[in-house]
Amino acid sequence: MEIITIYVTFPSKKSARRISKSLLKDKLIACANIHEGSSMFYWNDKIQEEDETFVFFKSDNSKWKKLKKAIEKLHPYDTPCIAKFDITTNKNFGEWVQETLKMK
Image (cartoon, rainbow, N blue to C red; front, side, top):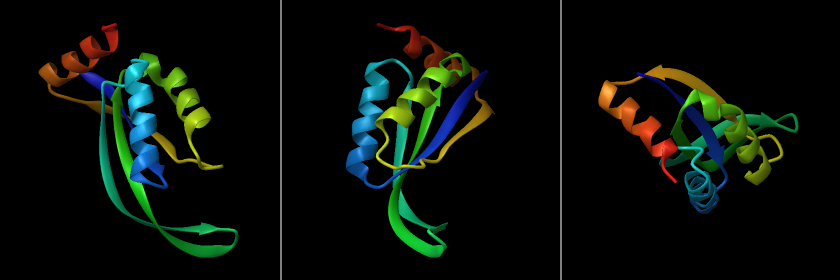
């Protein structure tokens, strides 16, 4: 079963949870896996190190464009990381994702 996973970083667990709940409510995602950690990156010509929250959203490819726009609109970063991965899952999980996204 093919679905998509979208990897997004957030400045805090609070913002990650707020946006995850909004995406769930709008049936753009079936679930969100939220993890805390740290990131290192270049910003303004300097190496930065920040605590961040990483989220893996599970969805269907048919939701991708609306999902990306919703994340961009709601996200607090000027340049958020929104990375899409096409994945193959076991049948039961893939069917659950698709059925969850159809529910109203």
